[in-house]
Image (cartoon, rainbow, N blue to C red):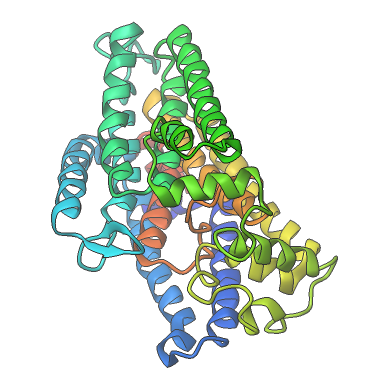
Length: 404
């Protein structure tokens, strides 16, 4: 029991409390959004949200109290292989929802692949052993151009499979998370900088092609420009709306327009809980008000002050993650901390930014707030791994027995 209590004392309290507060805020927002929907089962979606969070919390504490170095030894490779196989399977037999094959029975393999990739990178590029009494890099840790090529291959396999579903939003989370971990692993600075420049050029090329196609008068020239992007029609439409929000306000741009109006109408302190007009009157489509665009619901009800509180809670998670990584004495823990923190940041930024027109609409949920079972369990579990780094990253098992 002394060891157990010693481990609990080493947990990062800010990380846990911020996560718990966001889950409660999410339940309130889902209850509010669900109350305006006709299906009776959706009126109780908040309860499913809390039950899923409770399941995730059980895994959270199990991971937090287990040495992450043992988890990496046992689970890293099998988790990556299994998640990759599931990504293949979902493309063949997965359920098609809104034009994409993302669901396999009751869960989304793409969500599992995010955490699996983080675990594998920490195992491959990190170190969880001592060298002459100090933590350092192992001689066999991949480095240089060879290490970079290996890392890009490990990122590219799940990213390509997820993109094929098609799920551009999750792809835009997997790639930055992997690159951030490569930076944390100090693999090949020159290669990574060149890669970032290449990514920026590709993004500029795609956006430029879509913009040029929108202005082209010749239909054949327009089709040639769009074909160069290798994107699906609905993805191209989202980019067109992002570049020109007023280009199709009654079609593809309708949701973005209503979300921005909902966010702006909240004012400083909001309309009050369950008093938002845009989702209750159906201006904000009910199919997305509980998940992808739940920030618009929250901002309308809680205003700038409530949105700032939510951002502060996310800031507590992000800064705690970086602090845990900074204090950790081995590379495995640092890479885990950077990967999980980047994963949360990408979701928060992309979700909020798309709600106000700063990013194309990608269909990403808001961490701990949006309704989503697989997403919630995976993300809460990921923070459990992060807590494990906080608990074990600066201590050996013998250290816990010394604490009173």
